Length: 115
Length: 112
Image 1 (cartoon, each protein chain N blue to C red):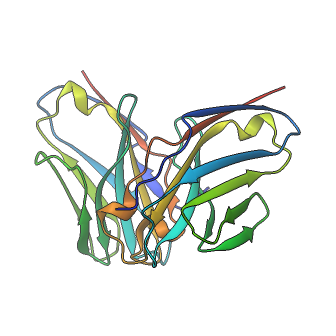
Image 2 (cartoon, each protein chain N blue to C red; image 1 turned 45 degrees about the vertical axis):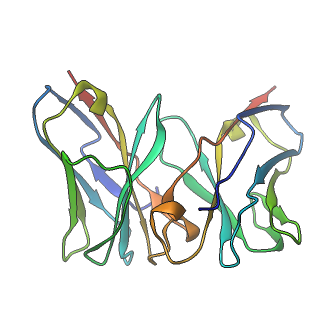
């Protein structure tokens, strides 16, 4: 158990819908990272928050947004869903803002299926 | 961006030592080298990190030559449960999108 909690574990929804994925980082970790992993694209970095502020953006679509709240949990909002958005979405956390350069801990992921 | 190059896949047998090499010719002075392991349908797990020479922990060793243009992850006496994808990342502590980007990794398959 990495200490990072993601909910829900599984999500099935229809095209055009909107969903929210939630991540609770390890206690004391200030950084939260979101990744998307699909079979044909590998592990894609989406966005990084540190202590409530956005620190870095990767290949995140405009239909996707995220935020980190004062209690440090984070939510990833996916809207106007398309079939191609079906993937595993991982959240990771670390104490520092150094990204994967520091020891980051990943959650078990949310498997999103868009039908 | 210090891009990394790793073999796409490797095979070995239980009980063998496995060495996975990562090339990072454009590594910068402040960059660290970090390795993660990922099992199917699970999030990556931090294995080891180093800056130069050799680093060892309870699961692996990391060898970094003086020019730091490559690094080798060494897994001693592998077992079937070491079958996974191994990622090499190069980044400095400043964060930024470049340091958060995983490559395609090396798919290590351990056979009985």
